[in-house]
Each structure stands twice: as structure tokens, then as C-alpha cells.
Amino acid sequence: MDVYEAVASRRAVRAFTDEPVPRAALERVLTAAARSPSGGNLQPWHIHVLTGAPLAELKKRTLERAASGDPGDERQYRMYPPEPRSPYRERRSAAAAQRFRALGIRHGDAEARRAAVAANWRCFGAPCLLLCYIDRDMGPAQWADLGMYLQTVMLLLRAEGLHSCAQMAWSVYHRTVAEVVGPPREAILYAGVSIGFADPSAAFARIDRAPLGETVTFLDDGETG
Image (tube, rainbow, N blue to C red; front, side, top):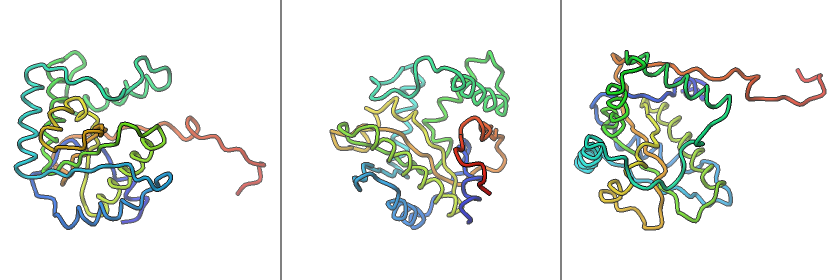
């Protein structure tokens, strides 16, 4: 698959079939993703891949907590600014509106929205979950490395005909996740990535992106072709 095609076709899939993900494909992807940029070659990611019984147990435990109204564990990092300013506030709001509209969820339907959020802990039906950890003493530069690593993983998954959904939601119940996967004690759970084959019958929203002029500034001599 062409790189541009992989980028264009990658999206946050929230409806998967139960078709198993080939272990060989995962090994190819994760071996190649190790070539992602990493300052000082620290490679700060710690990865756990769950399928089968371990994943079923994790889903069971986290869904039980979510169903009980459990707000989650103490946060190990801040997902979003507490009061995002413009244009970030509008972008986030528009993305949520597009997603819920595609799902047929009305603006005031709080119960349906909660159910849509809880689907995170079902992996949206995906049969495979990748969990990404980082050591507590790593700084912002190493967290940026995680983003580059996970983006590489998700693009390589497209080359294998697979789809994914990156989910910071798994960090909400990081203590429950740790009970199942047993990560290093010094590690923080950053995110999970649900992996599988997309359900072609499911409705989805292709979330808009800001036009180039809003996010990119070219500085040149005016003669660039």
C-alpha cells in the first residue's frame, strides 16, 4: 500500500468484526515500527498485546467498573487542557458532534453517549488490543516519541489490511489494566490501540481536518515552485 493511501485510509474505527488478527501480521508490524524516530534511541515504549482469554478478562473487569459508574483511577497524565481555547475547543466539539451524528445519537441523549463511550472497553468488538506504557521519569520529548511510534504502528496495520482505534480511555482504569497485564511498576499506561478488521456495515464519520492554512505557515522567498 502506498504511504499516502495508508495515511488517507487510516481512521479511528469503532466497529470491528471478530475475525482474528494474524499473529504473523502483528509481528511484522511491531518489528518494523521499532524503526520509528526516537530521540537518543531511547525507544521509550513498553508494549503489551492482548488477544483471547487475557483480553476477554480485561474487557470484563473494565466494563464492570464502567457499568457501575466508577469514574476511574487517579489520572497519571492530563488528556486535554481543562479549558481549551479557540480553535481547539471548536475542533473537539465539532469532532464529537460528527461522530455522534453518524451513530444517530441525539445531542441531549446522555445515556446513548455513555454507552458509546463504554464501547471503548469492549475494544469496539476488536479481537486484539495493544497497550502502550512509558516510564514515569520520561519527559515530554519521549511522550512525543510514543505518538510517532503509535502512528507508525497504525499506518503499518493499514498495509496489512487491518484497522485500528487509538484509545486514551484505557488509562482511565489503569489499575485494572495493570492487574491483568502486570506492567513494570515504574510504567504509566498512555493508551490502548484496538486492532482488527473493520465492520463494513457500521456507520462512521470521517472527521474533518483543519485546512492547511490554519495549521501550516510557509516562510520562503516567494520563488519556491
